[in-house]
Length: 334
Image 1 (cartoon, rainbow, N blue to C red):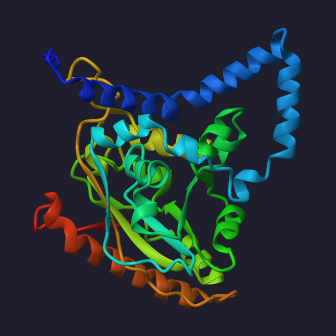
Image 2 (image 1 turned 180 degrees about the vertical axis):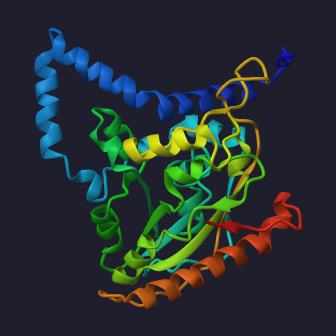
Image 3 (image 1 turned 135 degrees about the horizontal axis):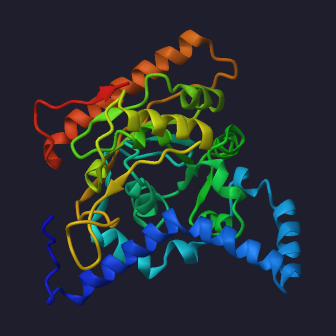
């Protein structure tokens, strides 16, 4: 394999952007394990009493990820996130006003490999706040991460909360409105489909978010992130292949998928784990009004689910030409 090295005379700003993304990759893939290892060292070392104090704190604070989290505007405004967003770059596109007197459930599609668009738009900077004043975004992620010492504090500071039913209910139950739950509908399973050019969404059997919206009267908003699947290449894993079977079994056991992805490196463009510089345009659609229904029937859930799929497809078709999607390509729902 011929290695393509980066030019020597790259502007300093672009190098800083690359370092910012490298920090994000480390945080996403290794920081949790690093924090767990550090905690074990504390327990086994001379500073075991610090670990005991943290365990006490963990016990007292255990429910916080399901009760709105503990965001820090200081962390969300770090300069490193500005360079992170500029690397791709990441853009948030508004198509309709969202009245802050309501609560909203935003369905984010597609998952991609590392959901860069969701993190960049809803956990950093002020783009969402500027476009949708009066709304506070909450990005829901897998509950397993909130059992990781120290790492849980970091992800909560960025505005992430648990994806448990209790957590989503807490956010959507805000009297007076002003809350926006962001749920990556396809989940970990969908990351296995995150190949460049892929438009396959795991959504046909995912109706829990519809039921939550009905129970709380939260307006549904489809969100499509163009470019999300273009950031990495994945080892070929078609359905039925031995690799895909192993990945799906591991996902059922661990709760999260393990896509074998690669892209570029820091000083060369041929291999590595740093995503390609591909623009991400996250388009927020128009709200679907939802009336509160504490005990929705299966038929009512299916009806709203079908309407959501229709609006999601409409959003995609209306904007695909702007972001390089060929006219003949459409979303595939599985």
